[in-house]
Length: 108
Length: 114
Image (cartoon, rainbow over all chains, first blue to last red; front, side, top):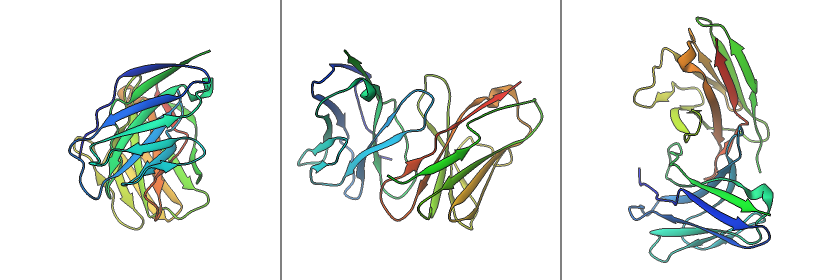
């Protein structure tokens, strides 16, 4: 499986945008880039996914580099409820394999 | 998004007994379901992948006779932890996927073996 690299932790202030980076230099042409987040004692929550083009949904935006070797999850206005561990995952057809993720702290 | 329901949310059992965890996809047909285990302060570890009507594929190091997985229908998969021991205490999470690329996760089951 292609591996992803994320910072262990990031901090943000409430109401400000947050850019969560992910490197995936060994991505293959058929790997989708998925982002999930997990709050304590809960299952992961789907955030967004993309293949080549940038994607927007009600939760976030996903910016994918032209060479697809990196991507950035953008939360446009962080709220306290966005504090969670964010996982960037590459997936082809099999199960999702989770790395350590980025723990996002949102300060009021 | 799609809904995956996992039951029970927490269970305490005695050492040596078996525990069954259910995972249901409520509003879509899950052709593939996945089971994960998560220890405190660690990431999720994929245990096994199951396709409806066929035997589960287990990850290396996961004992298939200890963690029995059944995926008898397109909306239900079960994980049975047999002869549970304290070291099996963990947070177990299921995930389901239909035809779309994204997968959806259950709420998780906190298993405590005493």
